[in-house]
Image (cartoon, rainbow, N blue to C red; front, side, top):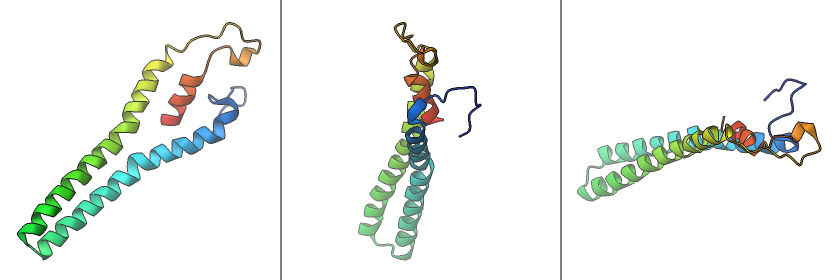
Length: 116
C-alpha cells in the first residue's frame, strides 16, 4: 500500500504488521471459501462415481457443512469491515496528546485500513 508522503500511515509504526494482517484477511476471505467449494465438488464427483446410499448421505452432510463454512468465512471479514467503517467516523479525540500527528486516536482508521 502506498501513501502520500505528507500523510501519516493510518497504523503509524505498525503499518507493516497491519499490511500482513490485511493480506491474511484477504486470503481467508477469498482463497479458503474457493478451496472449500472445490472440495465439495470433489465430494459430488465421488458420489457420482460410486452411487451408494451411505456415501450419498455422508457426502451430502459434508457438502452442506463445507458450503456453510465457505459462506461464514467469506462474510466474517466483510462484517468486521462494516463494523470498523461505522466506528471510523466516531473515533474519539485524545486532547492530552503533545504530538499533533497523533491528536486523533487512529485505531479505528488502522482497523478500517486492515479490512480494506
